[in-house]
Length: 205
Length: 205
Image (cartoon, rainbow over all chains, first blue to last red; front, side, top):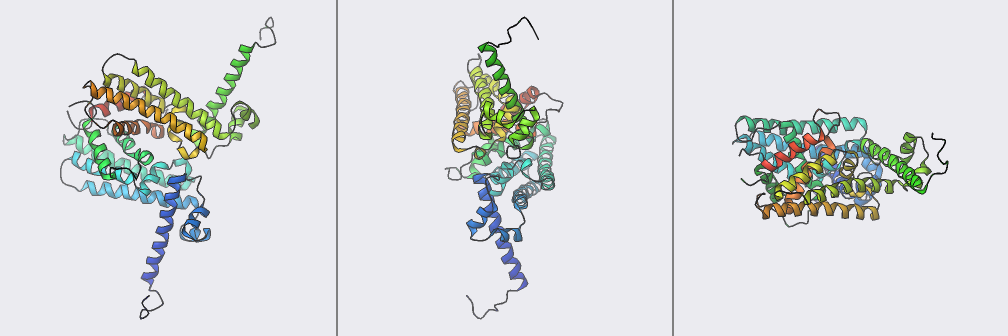
């Protein structure tokens, strides 16, 4: 400890400590939701894993529904950022779509993305559920837009963009159920491999 | 009512009435699990929807965990039957795989298949969970075997059969989350459309 420093934290230090505590709670919660399931996890367990009390979690985040909503919002925020990043890339529509899809699959193998996929709408309270659906619709729209652009510039085969987006999303959501972080291939390698299969198809070319 | 018939049911009639009652309970339960989520459904609600009491459900099926296990076993049984049916078909490996995949996707849009996909392993008690995983592994093995046969006879492009099976399964599991039975395309049309996209891929040929 630096004894020459003021023992009174600055407003900025306070904000940063508060954010770090909030992040630690969310990380502990999302890992427990993913491992045990949302309904099998209590906030008491999450609090105990951090050596804090349940009211501390209420203070930083609110009740269990609100904690879950924050977790899925982080995962959905990562997916939305990936779509924004892909949209501004050079190359064809197919290049931009593939760049997005690789990140999309990688995120679904990480804590918060995994939670997005493993959470059924019905697990959330009506208001949170509406927010969850709204963010998922935005990612679906982003994916469809990239597909439409790829069809328009001829880099993707003509198809129904809605059904294509559902088909691709399903394939790349599923690692949230089967991917073992201890496996030999990295999430990025697996993601590239899966996206390549989807692009090329299973029929010989 | 046929008054010339014996008022005492034969053993066969008894078995058939018992099976019909059991089926009615399972159908009511699976539809409620799918609509509300397993954790948000009580056996009291299921019983009430049939005008019976919860002990009647215990009598025919057991507790809620056992009811869910029966529901997913029916869905998994349909998938296993589809794989068996596909295996004996004429044509190339790709033809057999596609026949299986169309049925696979259709089943996932139906009540019991939908329940298989919407049920996370963690929702079940340890013993039921092991049985659930075992049946899912069997379907995964069946899908991989069909892929390996297709690669061997040249009707499918060379690929990693394990990752291909996960990718295809994910794409065709996802309708259990998005498919609206009131939509304009039939499950069979949607299934064929999705399987065709996966076979051809999104890159132009």
